[in-house]
Amino acid sequence: MPVYIGEMSTKTKRGLLISVIGPGFAIGILIGLFTNAGFARFDEGWRVSAGVMAILGLIYSVGFIWMPHTPRYGM
Image (tube, rainbow, N blue to C red; front, side):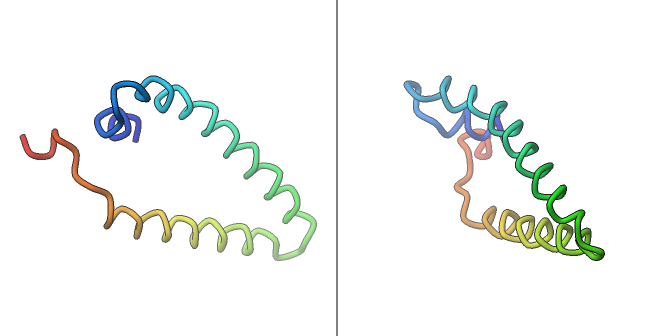
């Protein structure tokens, strides 16, 4: 993903977009930690957590269909 963002972003915003990826991952992991801790209180909470992850993964995978190709793709 960082390579894709680096190739597709404009020269003026490239550094900002690349540097935001690290904190974005860390915040996402933190949100997942608190979400899973909240679901752990229920007997079948792990199933809900896994279902949410599966749905988000499916949405992410379907979103790849509309992503434009990078200039490197044409090489």
